[in-house]
Image (cartoon, rainbow, N blue to C red; front, top):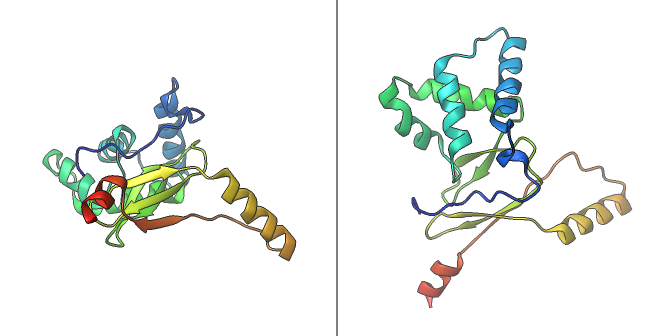
Length: 163
């Protein structure tokens, strides 16, 4: 799984556009300032690592990649918590029930298919499912604040190996 790219950059997503990383950085800096915290070099490296990722990362992935630069496990944990608080990253559950993270700012809504064999996480958009959810919710007077779908099964490659 390590070699497979998971994060899909939908055409409408602004991440590939000029200034995206800087906008993410500014949101994080403002959040920290509002909490009277400092945008440290360690927090900057953690954010940069997330921004450069081509797959959904665990806390251990980030710590493993950055521990050689003097970044501790607790620093990674706290930075992820702060990035979640300001809605820059979002959790995705992996095939073992553990959290993985993706940068979320300005990305279109999407859901995840999680392979139980190789652990790959596939991003997918289902406009028709979204319409059904809205219609049913409206019909019964329910206001959706947010939702996420994570479906667990087997990717095409692992399905073919299962027979």
